[in-house]
Length: 113
Image (cartoon, rainbow, N blue to C red):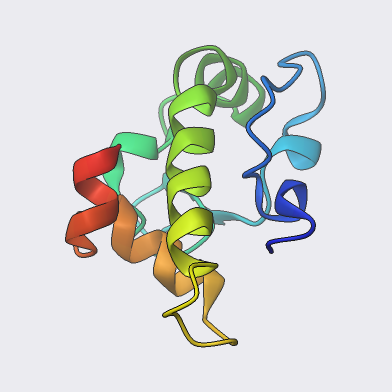
């Protein structure tokens, strides 16, 4: 993660919103109620794409790329910096750590976003 932050969406570059969603975000989760979220079940609703029952995925993705992608990248960057600090363990659950930060359970990360 320290050497290749782009692999965890944390490289700090402004992403090309014209690229397909799958190149900008992976994995994508559709929860039982139809809510589409990045990375992991119960990911913070601030970063949800919307509900698959309300719109087609293409519409949700287009809106999310314009309105949430930049915030998502900031979140990823903060979690990546926290996770690669010297006092952190060498191995972490990236998706779990990112999901915790997305819901405010990692206080330092959530405060910085």
